[in-house]
Image 1 (cartoon, rainbow, N blue to C red):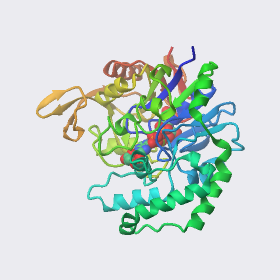
Image 2 (tube, helix red, strand yellow; image 1 turned 90 degrees about the vertical axis):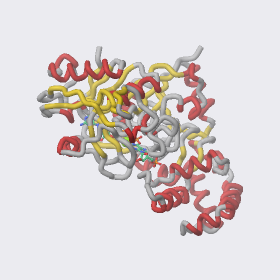
Image 3 (cartoon, rainbow, N blue to C red; image 1 turned 90 degrees about the horizontal axis):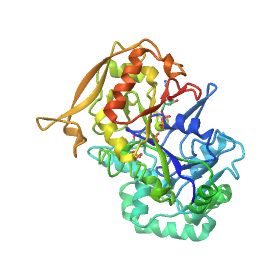
Length: 418
Ligand code: GDP
Ligand code: IMO
Ligand code: MG
């Protein structure tokens, strides 16, 4: 018998505050694993006023005792890892492991991503990091894997063949490819910097679970950005839901234990695509301003609106959530009235489920009375009555217990509901 892993997953369109909760939980976990996405993710952690932005490295990194794993389902940009992320931390050897089966995201993937976005009549609004092209190569079986960095000469030959196969596309997109010498030098650099981290992470996670270690699975992006269950085609290119952790790490469904869904007390989205409860007026502006809703990865302004209980209930069911962590409740401080989307108007009818085409729905709102201030509160009993009523209403609407409430970016300002 081995222990089951706990899981954190985003319930909205990303940026729900996963980083804060993973960091909080990492204090009591031995291992934190990423299973999907790439450096399109931007997870912010604030400890004693100091801010850390993580993209590929799991958010367990600030617990010095935690082991961090980047699973096979992630697309790994060596450049981002070496030049940006690893530099933030002292020696990570023995604390970070990268799957040899994870796919490499190389500079040309980002160039293809950006060129395609420019050519599209309706852009997706990607992060431009190369995520779609890297997963495309994986699925069409022309990708290159992290384990191949152990043999840079062989890998350079393979990539040169890939350039030749794609010559026509690259020239239309005006993408210049490096010479073999330059490519080999780059791959050798990646090998030097990363080789000690590259292992079979599936075996490693199995061993940790077998040894009864506490393992935490860190989702990236959010349920509504899932390639199958999100607002396609305005989604990312991976399975962001809890099931993605099975394929993205080599776990079986039986390995998954408690699932915590992360959701803001309101809602945001960055990039294009449907967002039924978006507020285009001064309330949306206020949420953006008070919530500092600017992307961690691209700096883009996030679109803001009200909590969408229909989408959240759907997301909770998709992920098998045991509880919700309700984030950024303090951003609603001082609002006289707070709206919650409790249903959709769809083809002349009122519905309470997420239909095929979310673009075609109109939100139906229920209004709640606001409260004065919850910022920094750390005990449930100290919350204002109206805030408690709001939380209870969201629990009923999503049919999911709210087990964690966050009242500021700081690790300590977190209420664990008894
Ligand atoms: P992630 O991608 O889900 O990890 O979320 P991001 O880090 O991209 O965005 C969440 C932002 O909200 C970060 O800047 C956090 O520091 C901040 N944050 C998290 N929880 C709270 C909270 O309870 N209150 C406030 N005001 N900010 C929070
Ligand atoms: P975290 O983990 C918010 C969005 C992009 C775009 C769409 C596709 O920080 O919650 P991509 O570059 O993945 O091909 O872009 O997905 N997106 C995110 N939005 N948070 C994220 O990650 C996101 N990762 C991708 O803005 O709309
Ligand atoms: Mg983010």
